[in-house]
Image (cartoon, rainbow, N blue to C red; front, side, top):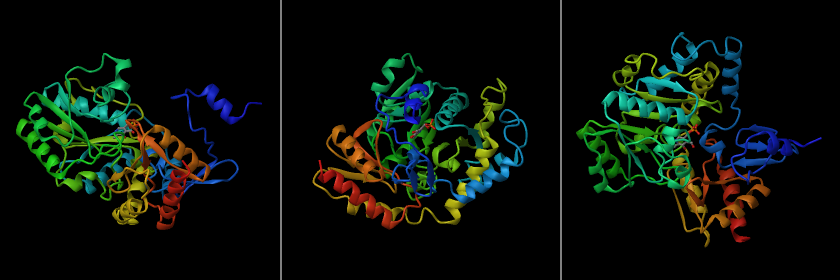
Length: 394
Ligand code: PLP
């Protein structure tokens, strides 16, 4: 009989020739467990998803309650489904006034796709400006605004009328004109290896968008739901975007995303053509119930409160001759090493020692640190000493 690992390689489509192949039996709190019961501290959060930890009891309870009522009932946007309504209402309460209309999707990439269509439709313009190093998802539209040619060249032709500018480069802002439908930007660039925009840059970007009638789309798919120490990272910059993209940590472990804007902007999707942007499963009732419960946990348990202090702790402990730089905002940190070989060697040693750590799609010479916000000081100490031990053994 073939093992689970062999069947995984045989019957589930592979995305690389080097999968981690860690078999997961269970996940709870800040830990994953293999079939032998060995615990692994999760320093990646399923790629910025498990912000409140795995299988939070309040999320499980909300899912179970919804399971008693209904699963899928119809395509998105037709019937009044209270899990969607309640989650959208709560999101609009915690967001600024102009972000009050929530279009639910199943994933981050779909949120990106919806926002790009929305911007073109609202402004009657086609040009989109994106950033070098950006990652907004893997679908065709999202790939078109990805700032890494290596991942794009095999899939051309992509969307026309896309321009790229450099983060934190003020002169580039002049490329945003009254021909530009939207600028799309990660609140902190994730896959580029954690690149934090300057405050003055974001404020100048907001002004240039205002001056040219360009929509500012903030991708908070990785930064949202407390990861940077604020509920949403735009709060660090004293600006409000026109369109907000959320997903990943939004569902407490369930698949869901959204693009959020004002009722005025979102209103253009209703007609000419009607049903011009639709989804069957977007805003699945079970995912919405889980998402609302997860947001309430973040707020009620004050999970953002320790994030800045935990960032400091990581940065102060992660000192080693092989570490060139530790950069980031909140619990979204990159440990810069010399090359991929070092990153791979450290990741493998950490895994042997019960710590899950990874790298970045567009920066494979840095280690990714993005633990659940529920991580403790003790666990941070364990994580840092495990990483340092792995580095010393190279
Ligand atoms: N935007 C950002 C900033 C992301 O980090 C990701 C995923 O890593 C996405 C969009 C795409 O989200 P999804 O994988 O849910 O399609």
